[in-house]
Length: 114
Length: 113
Image (tube, rainbow over all chains, first blue to last red):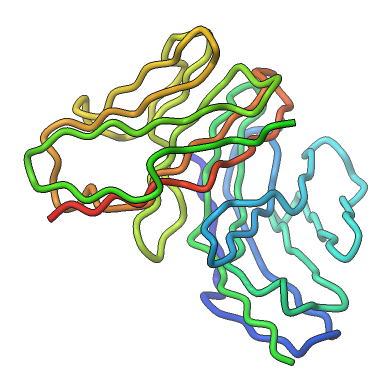
């Protein structure tokens, strides 16, 4: 069975600084996808970034980038130039290729302070 | 392009009652997945519907059931409500493929008293 672990229940960062959120996962699959979703107080789950396991290059979306270490089964999210609007719960998620079901971690609550 | 919508926003029921939650998928999407998110936890997969049939189910009892309609919208039905069913219920839509990403609606907050 696949599992996703987020070991940081809460993080805080000053506006304009950089923060890294950690995620590890366990799977015996070779074909899978990893995601970071953001859930602000409005509750809607918003896709931040996606990584295909077969791609060696780390995904990047504007201020958001990942450090994907396949051998270590690690998938961390780096947020650069943090903004107040980045305040939210961040969830790491896994899906096995060919089966579109997401397995989520417990989440990391990120607070960005002015 | 219309995003995923869910109704109602909030719902209060008493133990033993039945509830129906609704979801309209994003335009161009034909697959709907339902998740339960208890307070302070990550979402848990309930089931997925594709072409009006259940296409995978998580560890939830049979009193959780669903439907998908020809326009790809979906319903989640929960019978014999229990206090532990209190949660945020999230619907996500996608185009059924090996690589597609799921996009979520705003959720329905269900409170069981």
